[in-house]
Length: 385
Image 1 (tube, rainbow, N blue to C red):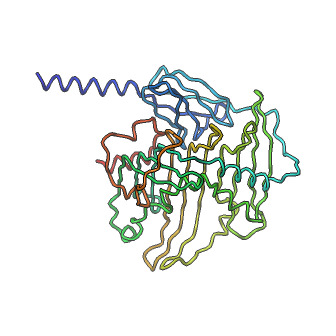
Image 2: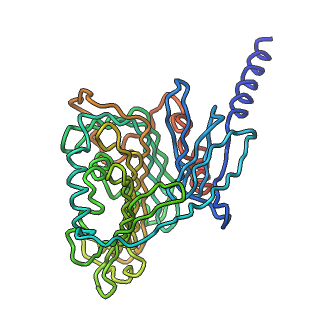
Image 3: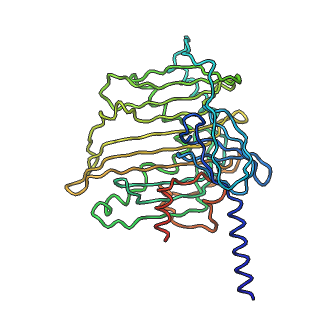
């Protein structure tokens, strides 16, 4: 009798949880193409407004959420009430009644300088960011490592540096046995997980480009039919340069005059300029690199919303290793609190993977985290099995 009761409870719990999960995909209403990294806002169990994002394939998965507001800077905001477990949502592209080059005495370069200077002053004041982060590493387009964690960044006032505490984590590694894996499979990420928030608040992705004479920064004013307007600053590399240059954009909210988003990546037109360089016992060539940040401006200070960093490098070591290694790091901010006490010690590893597998709850299914791509989920499932 007890066994039957337990089976019934487990079955009921599983069925109930499945019924309360809504999976969906967001597409452009005109092109029918998926729209990546769309903002999804909803109220949590306490009635507080919170949110998540779609992944790069426009997919999302929400649990115990029935009503959302979907927004993207290039699309009309839409409110949706879920009536089925699987949904396909179409967003209408914004119609811009104004999209023109700004002619001003202040150049795009100088305008960005002033914005970044102001942003650094208003960045943080002893802030705690509750976040979800994930790292994915591939060798020759084959997944080798996956790690994710629920983490707290305690950011010190004024300098963006932080004490990191990892509360829940898991680390998954493939069992590659070839000669490459013995050397390269030890790589977790090209950067230090403790520095991601610092890089975001320091605006390193665009500040380094501002210092270079190889770029121009064109300012555009965009206004949609509803009257909402923002400034779009296009980062343009010197077309005649034989250096490895970047391209990208910065979006500035006109009401607050603050940066709300920027993205910088190696320009397609200049990837041919990447050269093999000697680094210690290896030779490296940077194939691709990008940084993408989203912010909101609340209570007279910047709050990080999302940070993404990725790279792809070619590594040559001796006769056996001629391989491409790529890594991606995503950081989604779940909650933010100011004027907190900064702990003296925290996680001192460089990557989430070093924290290992240590969790008491399936944190990756909580807080409605944006889902993995299908190929990534297959890798995670294959290693678990």
